[in-house]
Image (cartoon, rainbow, N blue to C red; front, side):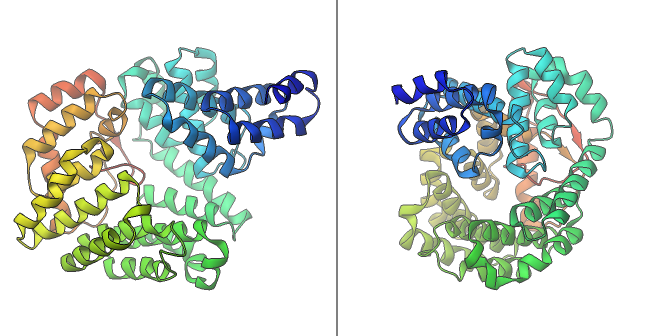
Amino acid sequence: MAALQSATAQYDGNPEVFRIWIAYELDLGTAESVAKALQRTRAVQPKIVTMLDERWVQAAMQKSQALAPDKRQSVREDICIALADAGWQQKPRTAFGSQMAGCALAAHSLRGEKAQTGAALANEPPVDALLTLAIDRRHQSLWPEIDRIGKDGFRAGLEHDAARAATAAKATPRDYQAVTYQMQTLRALGRFQEALVAGKVLAEDKAQFEVVGGDAFWLANEYARNLQALGRYDEAIAAVDGVIALGLDRYPDLVSMAINRGDMLLSAGRYQAVIDAMAELEARHFGRISAYGKMWVWANRACALRALGRDEEAKVDDAKLSARPDDNWGAATAAAACRDDTDAVAGMLVTRLRDSDSRPAALGLFITFDGRETRTPFDKKMRQTVANARARPEVQAEFAKYGRSIRYAGTTQGWSEF
């Protein structure tokens, strides 16, 4: 490794040396050394960074997970900046590329790098990145400019993101990631039927699902989410079922979709089906589910049990959720909302706002979304419990320390409601 690092200092003009260096760091190095390799390569061989395989970037981000929160944040920022500055997945801009652009913008702002922040703002950052800065007091110096950009609730920005995604998808109509991203931008605008039209050809070509794999699975998931937003719950569940039928044992990625299916079943009022589906996941697939995913399994089942009046059984899952709520604050909050426990939701909101790791997602709960999705009485009741908790004086006082409320012309696409 030392010899390879030394070689990069001697052979600035040899791009292959830098590609091999990054590969070795991903395999044998630390998160910090990967970030340094990307930074150095960005400086002398930017095309290597621009052309990095998405799986390499995912591996780089995964390496940072083991670090302490403050160090993890710094390393991730270094990685984001290197990728965004190199134009990784920016032309055309993908969903992952948008994440890196937004992450880099926030990093420059937090580091007080005014010139770089200004340049990133001028580079038409994705709306979700701007909204993230707009609600966070750490970026208060940028609020005048962000407020100017988002004076219409960021509607113009959402339209621009959708137009850009549509252009990319039109150029590569068989690119599942590009079409999925187009559907997501349309869902953010509340144009659910248009999103279904955009994804229809690929979503109905089920023969290609196994050939394409993960990207096709997530396109089907996005297709189902748009059906769900229109209140077409049975169709949404059927769309997901068609993919899950390929087999969770053969395709572990489908476990996440099976968990999402539980949420769809809840909205459809099929409570016993939720209980049965989550029990099967727990019995047969729990070993491959992350701590985060397990929390949603328990939350979905607890909500279904309570909807059927089986509160004593639900308490078993409630206990699991309360043991480690920081594994998935969203799931813990959703379960408390299911049982109409405003006190518990308010307490969790205060805790989340005080913690730097959980705060960004918690701030998003105070956005006022103008976009509307179809909601069942069950869905509405849960969200009203969260709204009641948000309005508590102690919660508002804590929120005022860290953020501000913003009206947003879009839907909750990409944002947690719990």
